[in-house]
Length: 130
Image (cartoon, rainbow, N blue to C red; front, side):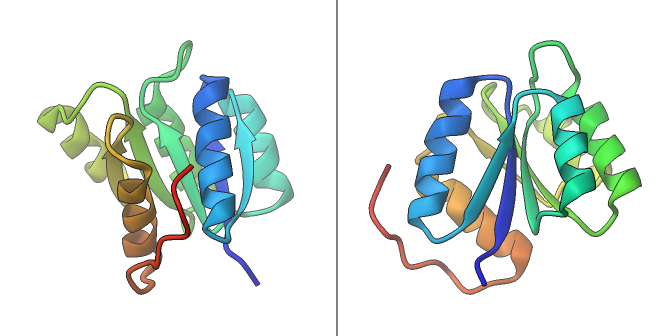
């Protein structure tokens, strides 16, 4: 059975791009544009991992991280940042329970590797770029 990943990002194009890429890698993917939609999806079915944008348009991704970890402590969360690697912000994310982080400007292969590290799986064999 394939791993189930929930992508939370307020940018529809980012959600679609990540979804297409992860499906090509064999994952089952759902997506949400807001924390309310994400929490509803989490309540229906727990994913193996959440990819969460740290800079949601009208919400603080770090607060959403805390909410997810409080309600669903076993769920792994990879933070996605479009701001590059701001050390203080990333340290705060890890302190609040993030299992990793990836910049949106890096190749999607980096996200796949972060997912594999968080889930404790072997290094992935890439199935073509999105």
